[in-house]
Image 1 (cartoon, rainbow, N blue to C red):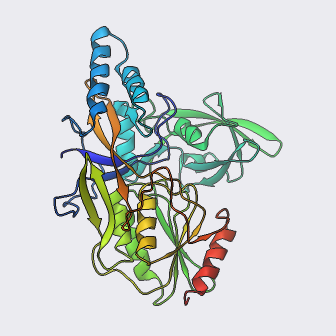
Image 2 (tube, rainbow, N blue to C red; image 1 turned 30 degrees about the vertical axis):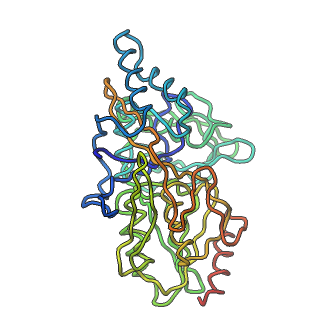
Image 3 (cartoon, one colour; image 1 turned 90 degrees about the vertical axis):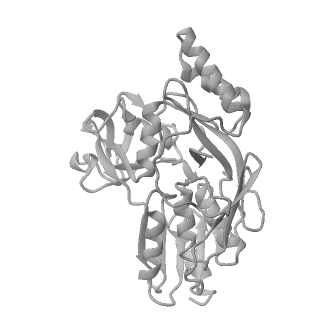
Length: 390
């Protein structure tokens, strides 16, 4: 099968909302042996123009072609066809949005360099400003309130939509394009115009806890994340435990998740998946650290490729999983190009953990359920780690 299979992000609510922080999880088709082919970690590829092993690919392509012939929007026609199909995870991307997706999976994005969260009252608060970014140069600080983006009020909107407004897309809002931000700090309210820039993500970070354990935080499985996890494990003090923090990890390249699994497993099965009824398997590389204590910390934002990794570590007895139930995204998507250059990403199968558990719609239940929010969750994970011999 040509093209790429995707364990993708939740479908966007409507067309026109640019690609969000929620990354698609990309899986290059496995060989007959079940191993990933050479180059599996490469995050960019052209979507296949061949028929995918799912009937509604043809239905969506037909709807788009008919709309083009009639002089109406092929993207809107394709989206209606996806909605009629009942494909929960199906999505239609414009050419620019798909290019933005490829960049995001490559660890790059166009934006202003700030992270945000929605407070209980619906307000959007800046939680991080990337040093050297346009937001930092404009004097925006952590704790500032973001009130509007290009005149659109953002209070009460999902953070993913707010981030989409900040980033725009690669066609209509390239690097260098201006975006007007409405901000508030204490009693001061002002408007700041910043210019988007091409920025790089840092998906894996690490820090030492006072007790000697290492926290490895994986924000997403973009290109290079798997090797970064392996390097972080090698740098951890000999015999010291690790808290693998996968909270809020919405997925990424599945090949990178498999590489991350290889840091903790000595080969063996990571997951199985089916495409059009054909069963395939993903295996870890041999030589991982199988002895040091390991706790995986998860929450309701742990999705897709991150769930695949969590399920492998849990099923194979390699990690104690703590936190709250994961999101439940375990279906396989495959992209294909539509006549106008847009891309249909439609469900063709599902993956399972090594023990055969399905994830889609159910998520994974931690071995120890606890409040996974905030810094206190890491301290609770460290306590569990201490009981494993840390």
